[in-house]
Length: 219
Image 1 (cartoon, rainbow, N blue to C red):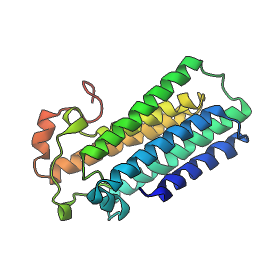
Image 2 (cartoon, one colour; image 1 turned 90 degrees about the horizontal axis):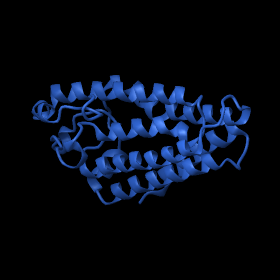
Image 3 (spheres, rainbow, N blue to C red; image 1 turned 90 degrees about the vertical axis):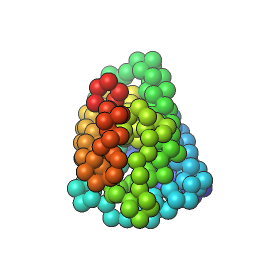
Image 4 (tube, rainbow, N blue to C red; image 1 turned 45 degrees about the horizontal axis):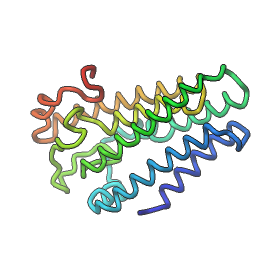
């Protein structure tokens, strides 16, 4: 398991949370860091056990140009904005505290969302950081694991995690950047789905069987 990406993610998240809040004794932040660390470590362990997946995600090849901005927003800018907004909200008391039960719900749902992403990754050896048809790796449609229920379970887990992060951090104001980030995840899902239907053999037939992109019975 490669520890460098795990530690890098932990450090970046910590800096955003604690600098913006101006304090280290912020329990909510430490809880989120623990969930993030566990999720990152699990992903690294999964990749270590799957050399092909590790190679794909470690040596990122060029993806679709239209995807670059969306990657930046959903993976970096959106989460950073959510963390910093929550930290400032905590520091300057912009909004009233959320009920403790909301925090508990946020923790449970965040853990489940992270598990969904890990399940998606373990089920799909073509789980890439960028949008590209991996012809060099014999790309085919994956229909096992969570892909039996929605076509983009990894994005579903990412969107859910993003939306409940403000609940874990006890910040009403952070719901705004979190919602915008989740909307970009949905947009990225739609664009990727359109590309896969146009360019990946068998995907259109799969889409006819598994009708929903992110949320069963909804979309």
